[in-house]
Length: 350
Image (cartoon, rainbow, N blue to C red):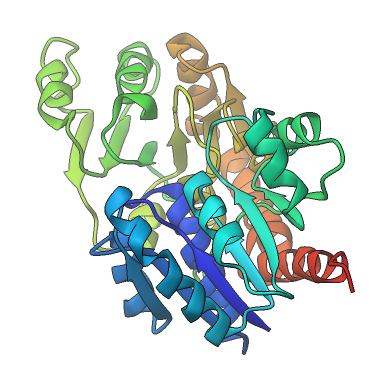
């Protein structure tokens, strides 16, 4: 199959990771795949490093003059499917799609769909919508009741082998240091948890603008010996192997959650906020525990229950690994996306 992905974000994000993971897996399985995006963007750089065909265009009004050339390039590529991963990419796809190409709009961002005269017009010319989580699927179906909408959660590659959790009560976080990721709630939970879990350690992997502020809070909260900020870790799987539990205390967003999938693929129980697409990933009480976002006391109680019960943590981790293999590894991701593409192609007028 010939597939053209349009992803024009100027930064790295969960949405970009969804698109790039899919494109790389499609190419690995034999499809001819191209990724088009903004000039000098991390998306294009990552796509090129993955060996994918790429093409850049200019952001904003300066790029409008490039549309005729992009249209000619799309005709030459002759895609069967153009998969647009942002709203602006969707508009571009509708402008440049050659005759016979199915335009698919993938929604893997946190904002719900809204019906306006413009979005209804675009939906009427879109062969299919892909929703990365069930909440997005519901919003798309409500906004565009006549559209073909399918749920396809992200899949990621994981380690071939995984180990049992360590004996020490170590919880880990894989997230950028941004307010929406809930690190401050986690610090308050750690303050509550520290006297209840002897030997507690919380390791935070990631970079971001809140690093100085978060480190400053450790002394007043008496957490300097309990919580460590490690920066970017070179090997996420080695980091996960050193933790008994993975934590995702996000306050919002998480339309897709690469970190939660990484904890599951690593065979670790997950304690996470009930936001975005996380409830689609974590089976509450089976592969981990879900808590209300922003509730430090609930987060502390959930962490205590698994950190103080190694057997339960290991059982949840094993169940999470099995759930990842069955539903969120690359094979089902590719298979379910291909099924939507086939529906989209067959829906075109003949």
